[in-house]
Amino acid sequence: MADVTLHYRTAGGVLASRTVTGDDPQAPQLPEGATPLTEAEYADALADVQAQHAAHVQQLTQEAETNQSADYEALRAAGIPEATARRLSGYTGTDGA
Image 1 (cartoon, one colour):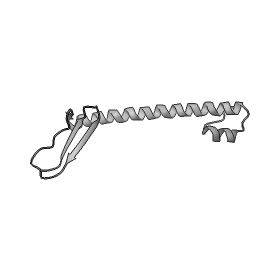
Image 2: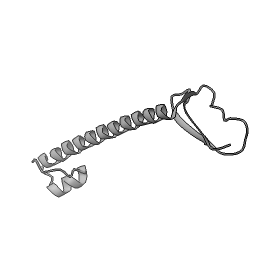
Image 3: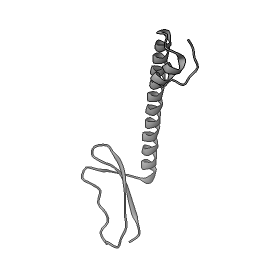
Image 4: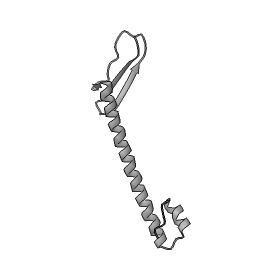
């Protein structure tokens, strides 16, 4: 028997693939409650998950940059020197103060 790759979505909604190698005459079974997917369906679903992840990472990065900028501006407004305000806030953008 050649390598057999199963693509599926678990009962909990997780995308998974499993490759079985060997001479076992019995075909591999999906986990209980799993929904089989074609390779194309799996690739599309995985691309969607990756796009959602990238969008979430971008959102978190934007929020962190906004917070750093606000912290930096507050420190500068309180009279903290620029270098110290940058170290404390982690802000690396332009000095707006």
